[in-house]
Image (cartoon, rainbow, N blue to C red; front, side, top):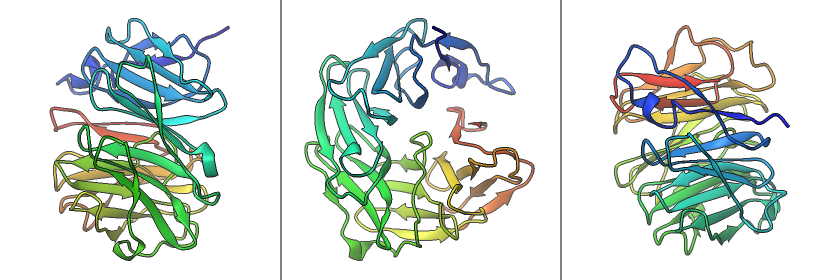
Length: 293
């Protein structure tokens, strides 16, 4: 069977290059499942995730990939994996009701604990992100005009929904696309931004206090049931980027990026970036941006 490949440069050493553009090399994953999530801890240790309960890990910069087993998850689609250390990582599966789950490993994937199962049949979790080993958050599509955000402050042992009164109202059908697990960006100890879409406008949710309270900002992105913001990245507390488009019209979008220089209060369209884009990330030298479709 033909195996899928991983683009290793964004995962590890190639992404760190100070050359005019990142260098990319293909690596064999050893699996046929479609991969969506990627989390690089070091140049050597990287995690990836995808359909059919797939979670992968490399400890040698991608020369070899180990397929990890989470029992009973063969039917799940792990759209997001977030590693907080070489041995500790979280995997989030998507879907309505109990298909949305969060698992955690603390021993490099040998064992996994189910930490969260969505009990609301109308909720559909899309992505998660972590500030550190203890503090993180995850978001679902909105339900009945309200955003659904959960947070943890104890390494995922418990997850608590953010009170509705601390959130702005959601637009009809507004949500965060489960494209690559990168529609949440975190910075420092308590700042986070979430890109939305699938409604009449595309917006950015922002918190400055670890998810306790939230505000929202408009963006110049077009929005529809299949269009909006798919990925967000911040270089520091003020400078950020968003990309996206319409996944049903991958070649039609134009000016498909926007930037902020005031911490997400305002967003300005970037000219010249076309086509559907599902991921954006700052290279560690902070002077370059890596994005892909």
